[in-house]
Image (cartoon, rainbow, N blue to C red; front, side, top):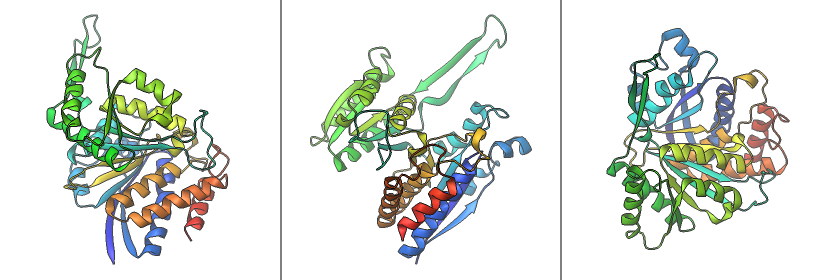
Length: 347
């Protein structure tokens, strides 16, 4: 029997509820399909930070390195810990240390879910560069608190980093409908984004079967709303991809349906899977968090691990659940009820 070791980081707020829900579904499908999942839970979170002064222990990265994958719930408790501390103390270090340079976020409507647009047939896969660009963390502040204060945030784009994320996007487009949208703002950012456009044009020659279109990010944002069905695979920088995928979540019905994967494509380190939504501490005690995004992320994890049949069954169970109207109205169904319905649909 194949066995996979999974690091579970529920995090804060509703992260605990949705991680537990996804794990229930994943364990169920694993037993049915004849493989094993062994989960090890870590308490790393903003509460952990309040107790220890760190979002994770000093040896946290090395601890995670031995796992086959990481399933993360949600991290954040802004009333107690600044988001800049929690993000740079846990999520970003994991992405960078394990070279999870491809952030994958699918955007489509599940059956029974009504989005805010008239369009219903869109299926967009957003590939976001995940380890450099605008979130490189290079910069600083001087003369803090004075009238002469200066803050500098430097975006870093390397040829290796831009080329590998674009190649990843081209490969995804090749396996789907053969259309790639490369997203920049090269009319205003004449160095980094012009560079990105040049690399896109160079690589396009290696993929003659893929139709390539370069968009400015503002125009692409409008297209996602006005004509989402015209889009297939998007490739964008860290910041632009982050923003565009919130639009993607909105048009697919909300953050409760937005799944994501942080992928190390050469599998030299574990990849991490997480819902796009935050920790929502205001509803954490109500038991009404929608676990669908986390379950969907879990399906992406199974697919990455090679358990494609099980991943497909989880997605079919999600679709059967939402088609019955369960989990389609925010706050109507309890987390446990949605989870039970998905599990029932697996049998």
